[in-house]
Image (tube, rainbow, N blue to C red; front, side, top):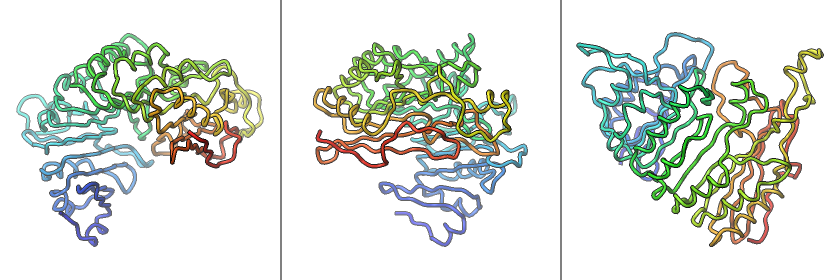
Length: 434
């Protein structure tokens, strides 16, 4: 088994980890000496943040991919991390004829697929999509995790990923590494969403599928026709506030699956073991019919629910406002939404978890995670004030079965901005007989 000299590793400012007998290298600062060690690595993770000491790692990574035939897993992200902005590259500097290793697992964030950096072509220079397609054997790829790729990627790779088993489509990374939801709703936007649906449908039967950042629900019917029988893990999620701010519609709520749509997923995906989705609570009542539909999944053992934190129809003044006391300013900058009800707290989480398990055939549900608000959302770098900063406290409730007992605990995000919390219970773990 390969092992690196600890002194060299420290000098190169990188971390090594051994997962199931394969080595993973996390690189934060480049040195030419790293190449001799990467040749024997199975897995590499590189996070490049311009304007910081972890700046341009994209060109060294390209050299390493050419010199590292044994690499099977790559995770790479690129973003602007500091306030010193220059003309830095966001894609590889392609050379005609170069070849990458046979990757089986690829995760990319912030990469510019439509860039035309490169040299060596006698005619026209290809986009990064076409250059990467020619440089690697994509039929061996098993897992693909991307922030929302452009239409050119969908067109180039539709029907080409013959070995894929897991697909993750996430919100597109912005310049600062923040996550941007696709909120457009014109004809071109709707056509692009149809193209995502077509792309997913053309893949071989998947075991895992995660779709987020689309702004609207994709048409799941054709997707489930292809992937339903093999699907074991499904995630469909949108951030709560993004399109509300992007469109200026203060009462806009994110899209939710209906009870009928959830029942269709249950029929189409009988092997489903893990499900994550957004759930709306209204009229001060928990959505009991929807909970009933979720409890009908016979093999579901892990469930994640994202509830809204804010009531889009009710607003109030913040308890704290650090701007001058003028009516026009306070109305614009110091007004927030009321908390959505009923409140999610440990007691409510315990009951929801218990009722779901009691109603499920075989009581296979072992883990339930519930969120309100965009808990621990990635913000990215730079001196920015994101539009989705939350004055109400995002929260996570986790429930699980341990020694035949149902247990739940609550975690909150803490910030001087937060005025209100959903949960008035103490931070402790509650348990009851299963």
